[in-house]
View 1: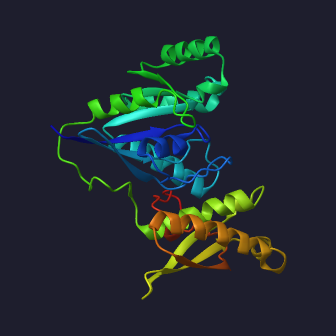
View 2: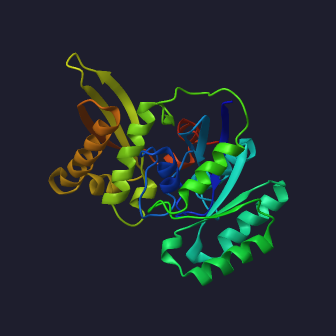
Length: 298
């Protein structure tokens, strides 16, 4: 009997949601950086376990929103949870029940969600502290199951994967068995380039930029030409992205091209352009293109 269902991962920024979804799927489908709030729009990764197809929603980190983009990201995370068959709250076990975790639990309680708890990064915390943290969380909310894992090392993932496979509803698969993500290649390519932006640039600039794939052209020799635009909000930011003599954007492009090529399995010719679009992060149309729902006041 086949099974298929949706699993929403919710948690604070840097809890390890993207690392976990990549680990469950078995390949990289979500971008990962050390910076918080890397994930913006929900992305679905598809994991297979025996006769079960597990569709995992990687949602933006839930935090105190201050901008229209932030609000749209947070609300998209909760929208994903409301539509899922299984809700998983993932948290960095080292942080304990901090303000972010408390606010998420409060929202879970108000929304009357049934949820399970994943304590991540257990390889970085002493067992005594881990058990105490698990008790504190479960005293605050009636989680169905608690899993202690390291998404990075793979510790504890087998038990979580088996639980999800056994718990998603019975039904036919929604995707081919070899499909790993439910997103257009154009979107995945843009996310890969945005990841390289986050890794190369510092401070606030990555948060003031976004990447859009404008053209995807298959060439006669089997390669692909990809034209992407990096949007920033001010002229000064454009100069930083370009770098002295174009060195920065060249490095970003080289790193992105290699990873995109590996993902699509064909040679890639990547062309990056930088443009200024003031207040793009408050533009409802831009937010919709990113898969987000603009705040009502936008």
